[in-house]
Length: 289
Image (cartoon, rainbow, N blue to C red; front, side, top):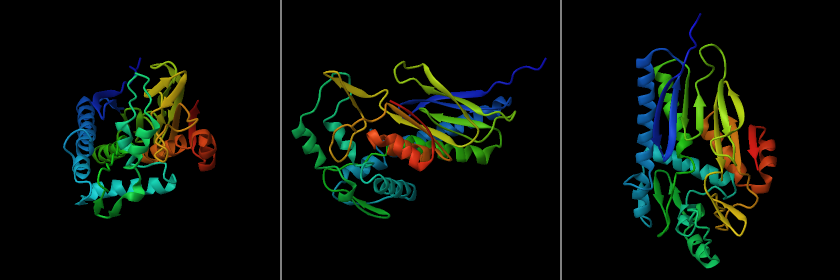
C-alpha cells in the first residue's frame, strides 16, 4: 500500500505574522533549502522596509523635508504606491500611516477627537510628496509606510527565487497572503482555508488553488468598538476616519500576490461599493460582511 505523500513544512515569523512554506516533495534537504530561501527573503524585505527599526523607510521619514535618493527596489515600490494612489482616487495612500498617532486599535475603545484627526491629516496626502525617480521629498512632518504592500511583495519575490531554485510544487504563505507555483505533484490543486471573521481559527470556506495567488484585506483582527459601533482599522486618508460600511474581509485571487492584495485593498476602501468594484473588475473574490 502506497504511503500518503506529505508536504515538507517550514514555519517562521516575519512582518508580525505567522508564515509557512510548503514543499510538495520527499526530499527533506530540498524542503529545508526552499524554506530557508523564503524565510531569508521575507526577513530581508522586512528589515529593509520596516518602520520600527533603522531602514530605508525610517531614513526617509527622519529626513522629511529633504530630498532623499533611493535605490532601485525602493523606487519600484514608490512607483507602485503612486499607481495605487491614482487607481484608488486617493484612498490608497502610503502617507496615511501618521494617522496611527491618533487612532489606537488596542481594545480600550477610545475614539480620537475630531480636532486630533484633523491635526494628523495635515501630514497626509501623496499629492504633497515630490517624487521624481529616484529622488523623494516628503513635506516636513510626513511619513511613508509600505505596510499595505509589503507582505504581498515579499511573497512574489520569494516565490520567484524558489522557481529559480527548483521546479517542485511550492506554496508560500506570509500571514495569509500566499502564492503557489502551480498544481501539486499529483496534479491536484492546493487547498486553502478562508478564516471565519467571527470565530478566529475556524473556517468559513475552503478554496482550491491551482495557480496564482490569494490575498486578504479586512478588519477581522484589528478594530475598535465603542457604544456598539465597530470601527475597522482601515482608515480613509481623506477623512482620517475608518471606511464606512467596509466588509469584514475580502479575499481575492489573481496571478500575483501583489495584484491580489491591490484588488482586495481597493475593494475594501470602497466600503459599501466593494462587491460592485469586484464584479466590475471580473476577479475571483470572496467578500464577507
